[in-house]
Amino acid sequence: MKLKQLEYLLETYNQSLNMSEAARVLNTTQPGISNGIRRLEQELGVELLTRKGKRLGMTPAGERIVTLAREALQKVESIERAAEEFLHEDRGTLRIATTHTQARYVLPEHIQNFRQKYPNVSLHINQGTPAQLAELTQNGEVDFAIATEGFDHFTNLILAPCYTWNRSIVVPQDHPLTRVDQITLADVAREPLVTYVFGFAGGSSVANAFAAEGLLANVSFTATDTDVIKKYVRLGVGIGIIASMAREQGVDDDLRFLDASHLFEPSVTHIGMRREVFLRSYMYEFIESFAEHLKRPLIERVLASTRRDEQDALLSGFNLPQK
Image (cartoon, rainbow, N blue to C red):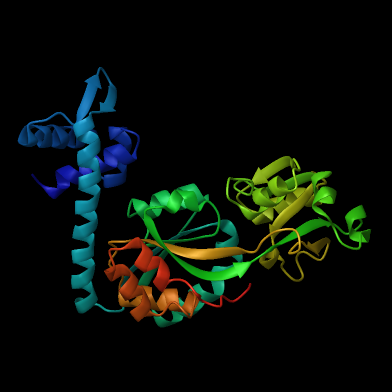
């Protein structure tokens, strides 16, 4: 058995059993992928894929071995990173998955400082929904995720709290809500809403607030991009519910940001990472620059622990800053 065969099987699985796409990602040929998986099946003595014409499926053995292959390849990556840490402390890659709001309004300052200190580290930012961020992290395609909502997707990851934030109701300057002394959730429910695509997912602060008052939100438009939401508020599609941190001086002067912290519970942004991840020194530094209470000795203790309750205890009790 060769690691390359496991890589072929895993990437084929990741690409929804499309061998041509797996070959493109791995910079090889489709016949090479197919032959590598067949040789792996022969060596193991079990079928990993079902084949009906051009249609592929996964056998139960294939499903199990894909999971083990992912774990094995992640451990190989950790070994390579450990060696690289001693050879080139200031070289490598840093891969982060996050939402548009974090990438656009929170991360730039931290990335700028990081780039000044580590110009030879290649940075990669992947944007997506919470479910996509969790999948990228769990699959080892990124080093960690920075997210706030949808933590039901992060159950197999370590979640370290970073800071709290709340939301604003965003409206055009002449909107009737600008003349209301204090907006109620009923006021908001009467308006067509423009907000995040994951904003009304189960467990979100916004969804919980509406459910607690027995109100039904009139969601007319959703997007993952905060700037897109603001654009459609300007077009009159509806009022926006966005992170207060997404207000940009000099750019959003045509909009009114109405404080909604009395309507919704504050949210906590976390850094999520795999339990078996190997973090390079510059990764620890980036985490601490993003959340100064998450210092390297603490993260090392969390990663060294095999008990979920102990990990949670180590990461609790912080007086988190507010954005």
